[in-house]
Image (cartoon, rainbow, N blue to C red; front, side, top):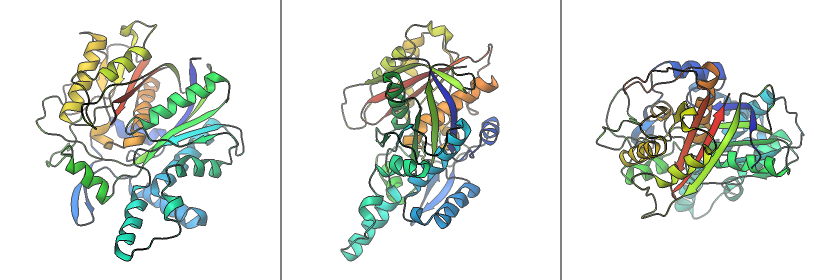
Length: 384
């Protein structure tokens, strides 16, 4: 694979805001963005977009009639992609590839149209086209008027980092010179929350931090869902205006014991991390942004994998799910954003309810992990 690859822009649309300054300031405070929300006739934890960003989506629907029937997951991706392309200096109509995925897809519209079908026996004309997963990348391509390939995909919680893998592969093959990658998710819907609760992985305890991601002493699962999108612009080689560089990529899949299992030592993550950092001394990795969904087994298995790869001299370890919730298909790129920001600001973001880790050297290389249902893992090594 032809590495490095330059990340010339990264835009996000999440509970933390939608511009780099706001997002970094959000990381500097210790407050979670998770709160109780009403879903139908139930109340549960979630990390929604702030009202200003929700209003932006409502305005987009009202001012663009062709977007009125689209799912929130598509609109989040459109807004994040517009920001990323603008920041990179790409122009409408440019020839660039697009790969933006989602874990759950059009959850809001699926639930709406299915409810109507159960009630009436009929469904709306737009039910099929607007719930197709390919909506995300294709509508982003339409919005940006790009002339390159557009790809949508779902690889559960590692969707966004698989988009990065695909972008790197297309650039390395010479089939594209610019690639937009990302993930988008709008899972704060009654049926989606009910599914997570049925699996007994969802947070239920009242606390200052309902999601105790990376806390290895917790006795119960504490995953919480969040919503949002992120998109990044990639070009081959090193360019001077890059936010950072992708120096290593890793991926692996492990055999399943059941549909959502992961081994005690996360063998898939061990392999993906080892692949991503091959060719460098592991001590060069200054920090790891962990997937850490807030589940008892998921967090512990990833920590065991990190120990297996790095030994006793662990890098600084962090995660953002205690603050943003788990944004499923968008989560990997939001984690990559955190890694880039720690490099740019040369500042480590601790998890407030855990023992503080002291930064003793400059942050130059960060490893970002994602792993999802299906036993698949991705690790991306980024540098300044």
